[in-house]
Amino acid sequence: QVQLVESGGGLVQPGGSLRLSCVASRSIFASYAMGWYRQAPGKQRELVAAITTANSPNYVDSVKGRFTISRDNAKNTIYLQMNSLKPDDTAVYYCNAKKVMPGITYNYWGQGTQVTVSS
Image 1: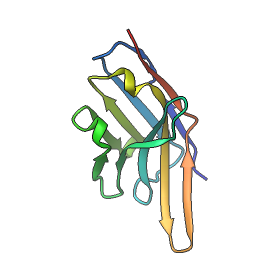
Image 2 (image 1 turned 90 degrees about the vertical axis):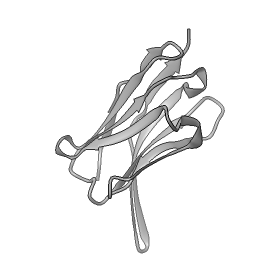
Image 3 (image 1 turned 180 degrees about the vertical axis):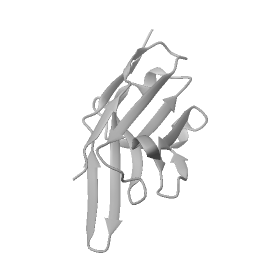
Image 4 (image 1 turned 90 degrees about the horizontal axis):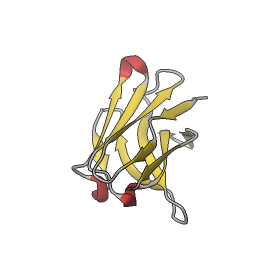
């Protein structure tokens, strides 16, 4: 089992910045791909940013150049630095850990943290 705990959400004005954190209950980054998802009201959950076990990041087009995903192995923590925030970024943001093996997939979620971008 893996527990994920997010923090760092809040209310920010358009153009502002926030940094989300996700702490894992144990050292998993060597075997789990990590990701940040978000879900806005009335919309499906979407992948925003992910980082592989090889520490390679990727992003959905709408956040490229504004968001940065990173990880600190010593702290079992991943981050999502969000800059130039827009009202469309308003959503609940979820941390995800995923490991795919033959015949089985391990998939864990955090409880979510609310990000609201509004003036």
